[in-house]
Amino acid sequence: MEKYLLYINGEFRESSDGGTFKAINPANGDIIAEISKATIDDTQKAIDAARKAFDSGIWSDLPGEERSRIIKQIVDKINENAKRLTLLEVTDSGSTIKKAGEDVFLSAKSLNHYSKMALLNLDEEVEGLSKPGVSKNIVKRDPIGVCGLITPWNFPLKMAIWKLGPALAAGCTVILKPAMETSVTAMELARMISETDMPKGVVNIICGEGSKIGTELALSPKVDKIAFTGSTEVGKIIMKNASADLKKLTLECGGKSANIVLDDADIDMAVDGAIYAGFYHQGQCCEGGTRLLVHEKIYDEFAEKLKAKIMKMKIGDPMDKTTDVGPIVNESQFNSVMGYINTGKEEGAEILVGGNRFGETGYYIEPTVFFNATNDMKISQEEIFGPIVTMIKFKDDDDAVRIANDSIYGLGGAVWSGNDERALKLAERLRTGTVWINEYHLLSDRAPFGGYKQSGIGREFGIDGLKEYTEAKHIHIDEIKDRSKKTWYGTVVPKD
Ligand code: NAP
Ligand code: MG
Image (tube, rainbow, N blue to C red; front, side, top):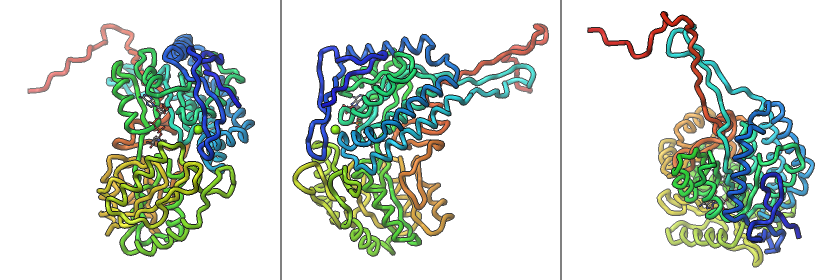
């Protein structure tokens, strides 16, 4: 069995009290690895290492070309180890092999994009308050400093890269804390990074309980920023803790996105799209299309076709390349999702398809659709994070917008229509960070991703995402060399 140690200041170490935890395969309960569990003391050591590395300029002062070269070395390592990483992602998280393979591929691709972003000079010259020629005004982008990166279990490697990439490109140093549920590929990343030219202390990776070591990261005055992806509930706790020293924050939290099917949509394509939106990775996706809003004219026909397609989905061994639906990540998530199936029934929604546990070993749940649900039900308002979709009827475009926006979340969503102009008009009215038209889930390294409302604060990806790891600094250089020609600001009085 693999044993993973904490990665602090370029060295692999046992935790200070020798504590460990086990990585478990949710498809069969097998123990796949033992991982050192960081204490508060270990966390402080990791923070000190990142602080020292940042303050020394060993990373931030390197030319962009050199930072880019070293980030690219990590990309190459991920590509060389793609198969191993994919298999570990499957056994640690219950991802189907199709999804895990794509996650590893996209992790390398995103990190490669960030290696190029390290070359960007974001500094710009702007006009000053006075006439041109009086001053030169430069806006510089400094790395924000030491970043605590806290990630969830649903896309383990990908979430780590989404944060590590821009942080390193911007010149920051980091402490990465993956979810305990899925720490294995982050520790593989530590091993790979240790084989590159990355200076010691720039990247530290520690595993352990979020409520303890994550809290330490959020509270520590030596940490300049927390970048978090996870539940809205924990996001709020982090925000509270980080307020002690007004730490900078980006939070990517929960969602309850509306997947809207208009009456002019290609129904067969929209049915496939609804399955992809709602059941990809067993519905354990923050941006998933969990509220399926279907126009009343096509509601029954859509439901019939959806049911027929879902009944053909293959549930089972995530290692099997033909599997569509793998297990839920762990027992407590399994129980929580099954609880929501009961809630939906109690609230009066009907089950169109699914609604049961699948098999007796592993935490499998059938893809489930609630029919004739309303938007005020708990199953329409709360994030379930499992293979559950609620089907809600709407009358017209205004009604669809009203229902879609009636949510505390605003992360994703889609419009399915044969009329791009109509779909775009509707998309523009949705209070959400990403809208797909006749598509779902696809993100771009070049476009910002993040949430309105309680789905989060800040953005990942694109220039916006990179800037989240910088502080803006305005330098005003006065260009009047002759003191007698200088007028001081604050001398304009209104005319009578
Ligand atoms: P979670 O319970 O919020 O945990 C996320 C991370 O935060 C884990 O590493 C966790 O550590 C850590 N943590 C827990 N308590 C903490 C605290 N008090 N202080 C600091 N860190 C703490 O979320 P999850 O169950 O792993 O993931 C599912 C959630 O993530 C869903 O709500 C989903 O919508 C959201 N998500 C959002 C996005 C997005 O981009 N918006 C993407 C993916 C997932 P341990 O669990 O290891 O103790
Ligand atoms: Mg696991």
